[in-house]
Length: 291
Image 1 (tube, rainbow, N blue to C red):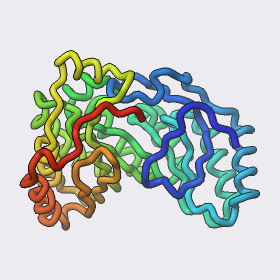
Image 2: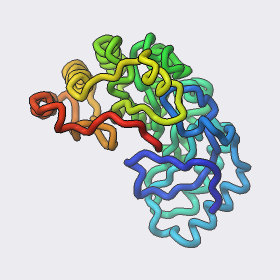
Image 3: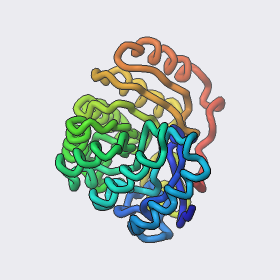
Image 4: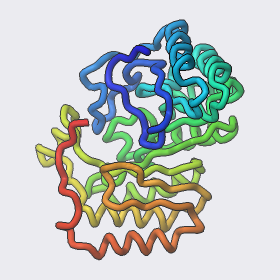
């Protein structure tokens, strides 16, 4: 098993086998993300090496592997033929494998198109973790996300049409105090259009070596308070109408809000209200993250 550069995976992939298919991130311009700012550059590992690592893992863990996650920043961006071969090989090597998952982006989804995504779904790709962050175009431009609201919605429709699960991420506070209400409102309507299988909540925390930290330190970006972040979350929960699962599986969040929408809406809003009633000093302080 060979790994290069930072290896990140979603908390929901904690029990997954990790086999690296790509290195780095092909976009690497998001102002809030520190992971690959110092490299390594984005590359696709040779398919032969990925298969060798899968075979080595199969010899040791073959009968136990139920989920496989392919790091790093955007393995969906690798050529469809190569990723399909990796998925097919994994399905052959691991007899009880239930899920193959990657990080992706709206741009990589759209670049694959329906033909490429259908091929990947047929080869065994089950789920894509994709960062929406915000449904507000003003926010998306400021954080240099690389895809606007329309592209994010189109990508969601493609994943849905091809039968690949879409786990969409939104980030509370990423619009700062200036765009907080607009961010929450537009994100809710974008989620309604995307119809993700799961909505995963994150809360913005400035990270070292990022342009957004510089903006915070220079007074160009005003961080939301814990209560303002929870107000954003409450607006999301109140205005998301599509059926989806909501998960707060991250250390950055102020509350653990888990359930299904719309059926759990009243319970979740009541839970958020308990957080809004707490003193601000009871929440974690804002600090500069290093990972």
